[in-house]
Structure formats: C-alpha cells, structure tokens
Length: 327
Image (tube, one colour):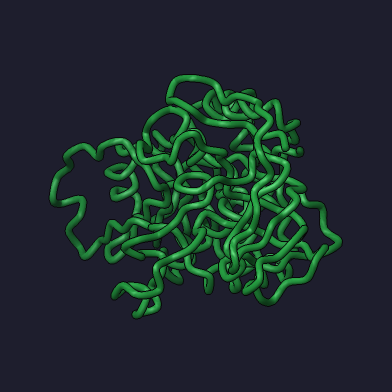
C-alpha cells in the first residue's frame, strides 16, 4: 500500500510502498477513506513531540471502512464505516483506567504517534477504541471530528457551563466548537492571530458574537477561555480576560512555555487547566451531539502524496478550517 512516512524531524514525509498491515486478534483492518491533518501531526514533524515510533505513518483523524477483523474483534462488520481517534488503546489496568479516566492512562497507545496512523491507504486499529460513523456522510467532512472535534469537545466540557466563551486560535477545533456553542445558546468570542481578518470574518459567519486579534481584549468578560493556539504567552492574556472564578483551558498537546505573570491575574479563584487526550465516552457524547446540532466542517482536501503541502499550509496559517488527506 502507499503511505506517507515520517523518518526524522525537519525532513519531509516520504511517499513509500509499504506492506499492508494485518489485524491482530482484537484489531480491525481499515481501508482509509480520508484522514484529517491535525496540528499534532505538525508538532511531530517539527520535533515538538519527540517520542514518535519512527519510522511512523502519522494521522489520527481517520475515517474508513472495515476490510477485515481479527479473531477476537467484536462489534463491527466488513464494510462498516468507522472512525479512529488519537487514543489508540489503553492499559485498562492503571489507577486512571480503573477510575474511568482512560485519557490519563499510564501506558497509552496513540494513533499516528506511537503506532501507525492514517496517512496511508490502510491502517489497523484496536476495535475497542474505534467509533461507528454515519454511513452516508462525506468522509472528508467527518474526518476533523475525530480529533479537532473530540479533543476540542473535551476542552469545551472542561471550560464549564458559562455563557461567554473565548476561543484563542481559530482553526479546525474552534470552527467546530463555535457551531456547538452557538447552537447551545452561548456567546463565542473568537481571538485569532493579530490582523487575520479572514479568520475573524469566518468566525463571525459561524455565529461568533465578536472576533478580533489575540492581542485585543474581548468586549465582555469571559466565563472561560479555551486556547487552541500553542502559544504559551496567550495564557496570561486569557487570564486577564476571564472573570473571577473563570477558567483558562489549554487544549493542545504541546504549548510553548508560559511566561511569568502577576499573581493578581490568577487571584479571584481563576483556574488554569490542561486537557489530555480523550475518553471513549467523550467520543460517544460528541459524535451524537454533532449529528443533533447539525455540525459541519470546512475542509480543504489534499491527495495523500500532498501531505507535506498540507502541513506547510497549516504551519503558515493558510488554512480556514481543516486539511484532509484523501488516499
């Protein structure tokens, strides 16, 4: 099969012919229909995340159809459409797994990072950690839901029930969550790269009450802010924007260092939280909500061999919405 393979940070992914994987006893073999390109893939390529199992096939927003199943894989039939997320499997034994917090597992496996992912024509996945998906929807439209949507949703839940939500960094996750928040009757304040008027207009078109640069102060006090931009200096800025008791949620797996800030900006029982990975319960809840709320995704499709261009467009901020590879 054809696959885009990561060998070393700073080098482009290589298009290679590799052996089609075979499913283990509890795994399924999936013919990939589409695979989203996530900022985490960019962090791997740029050596911000350094524990990739090289050589590696990246990609963890996978939509595809079951081609074959292992002898002990249950719940799926040949031809059924499924989605494969970042959380590939967990140990199911550590204290976090036993407590129902599998996102914090001590020995997790991550799709497209510690096991091969979906920048390929086929992939294998643990059948216990994949999701059923709409059989009729566009696979390109579905792909961003598998990470930008799922981990974005976990960040959104951790932000609490407040009515005013600030979203710092208006990319794939924020454009999905804006729709959900507006559908739920909340007010969204979108904060983009300074001067990115296209992204600001995009945010307003999705129902954001206000959109401006991340160097600006929202016109109303925020109940919570979610940071999807991996810029640590935005944490102190967001603290200044949230009310007493408000929350600043860091939604990325990687972020640059957070600079020092006055204790007075944290005082008043403000919170700074990080979000780690996702649980299968997050996935079940969000994918159901996505259908109920009629969420849509803005995507740009790339051929499999154009993965490096998709990463470059993301790195340079040239995308509105999400990039998706189509084998």
